[in-house]
Length: 183
Image (cartoon, rainbow, N blue to C red; front, side, top):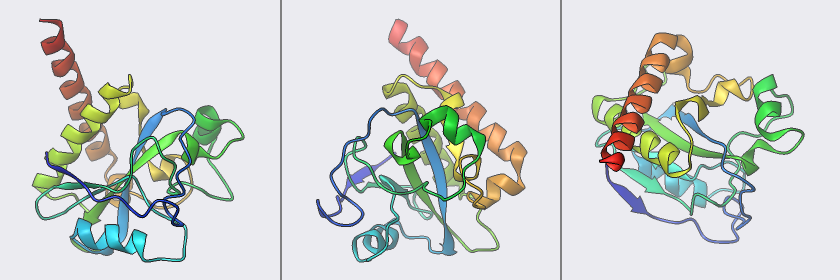
């Protein structure tokens, strides 16, 4: 897994510099447009007048990840006017962006938002590392659709067995890492 720091401008609309109150989970997103390049998506976060970014972006072609800001900073990736009950379990009446870190995944096409093989592996490694570092596990790994009514991550919504497989692989990696740390 390769993570490259390419931070958005501090004080910009998508990097206000506010701190997250408490990291309670990781949301996996997909860009919803045919774009394989993490660099293009990162730059779209920078060059916009609209709220909407994530702390990380995962490239479709080679699985590299761009960190757009420190993960303890707020960005706006899961806000809504209407939320599902899970949002209230995580954040109460507060904005879920103060508790959830987001990773955007690039896709091959709108019709096929399935992660590439290299992207899948990178996302597994990243998710396990992120959750483990924050004292969390795969129960704290979410799709955007579990918090709001948006159809994001479309592939996993349409293929729930793949989502369960993904979460199992993340948890297995966490468990393996924990065993190595005990030795």
